[in-house]
Length: 125
Length: 107
Picture (cartoon, each protein chain N blue to C red):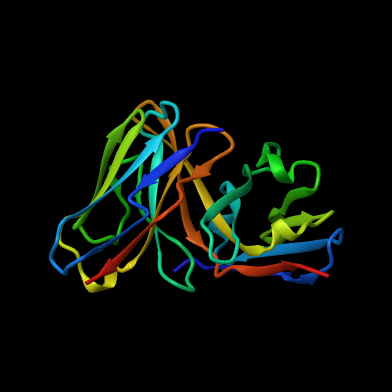
């Protein structure tokens, strides 16, 4: 069973920075798109960013553009989310998830599977 | 951004009931939509992708349908372990967006 393990969460003051890491248990997982999804306490899911296999294509949600940077190191089998200028509204559990992109019946589709267990980021003074 | 509106936001049903959750997109998204189940304190789990394709290992009582702007997730015979919150996700256009969620409780 493929697993994803996130780390790097914690308590940080507004304006501060954190770097999240995600390490898959299977090398094959890293040969795919990867996404970060977050969930504020008691709230719904929110897609944050994703990246293609070689890191040449990255997409972000509007509210994190210019503040968050997603990257990957395929040699280390790791994916990262560098978060700067953190705000209280960034407080959430952050999930790393394999974002499988596949072609079927004349269309491109995505599957978010598997998911990591999540790491909590708390932005507070 | 493409907005996804789920309804109802919560429901309570009895074991064995047929349950339907709807997800409406603010613009046409073909069939580029998935459904996810999340239990309290756990990571979400993929149920259905491409609107109607059941993910391997997911019980056949779950099914999905729809194209364009209107989608449904159906649980044909509700089981106690189906108590969870369900989310739709569109992957047609960036930013990818989730619906607000539907909390399903067992009476």
